Image (cartoon, rainbow, N blue to C red):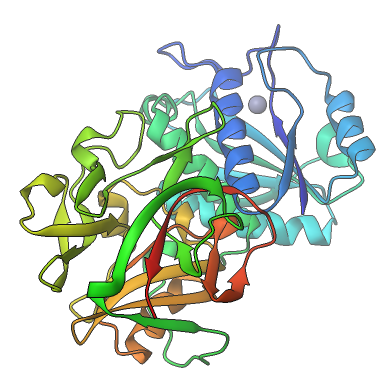
Length: 392
Ligand SMILES: [Zn+2]
């Protein structure tokens, strides 16, 4: 999908300004840039009306989206009111615009669930950017800069990243309330790939090449990574291969969100044992052969609630309905399960496979599973950092 993101205000127009000097134009620009990255990571094409602090007219914003041929227009704002007590999140669409209203409802639901602010609902308004755009268009008001509590939140980089994650999840139509989306009571197992692997024949390998150019017979996209801004990838969280620690949470750069958190980590020892532990320091694990951290999905047969996932430093946006890879333990062996599924289905799929301890690895647009030939993979050929490899 082609998504046009419109960070409100900018340049000579700062938009709302909080009591502690937080500018709406700056807040929404950062949310928009984070959102652009998240959408691109999930296979969308995204464009912003501005990428710096500059003035752009309202009609010009709509015209840019129209000329570009966007499928969806998302304007990002922070609210303001004369009453400092006013607070909460609201989303706008143009009166009578049915498709936009549906999007607005999904994004609003997601924002409320992710941000935990009061739900002011979906509203309609005759805003120029909603009126003059030729595609479904919505405008989000994240929270109130005029409210001291919400200004402090909007001034926080982690909260702004969460805003972006919430909008992205809402666009993806992650309709369930994230805070309460436990397992469904009935589901169909369909299109789930399962690879069982002997610990002795398993390892990770750092590759830092495009995912279809790894050059192994059997592999899957491994642990989380990010780009270093210079054309290479760097690992996020814990990673060890061949007995060597490649990265660990305690040494992650501070800007990485899981830095210095105890991360759910699958550990394989040279004696052939495998275990799911929580650690920020792989150096403490004796006999370590390889290890990778990921989002805990099921631990001891129990579903891991979203709060616990967020507590490890994850944003929650890693849990879209897209291709996911899970690494788990079953009867002392490793199991990699790959499925296109939503968060609510993940635990159930693993339970159905008899996997009672598992983490989610990197997936989304970077997902690939090869077993002699490519069994499943998202269409892009993105650079990935590391792969799980096995013999047999
Ligand atoms: Zn505004």
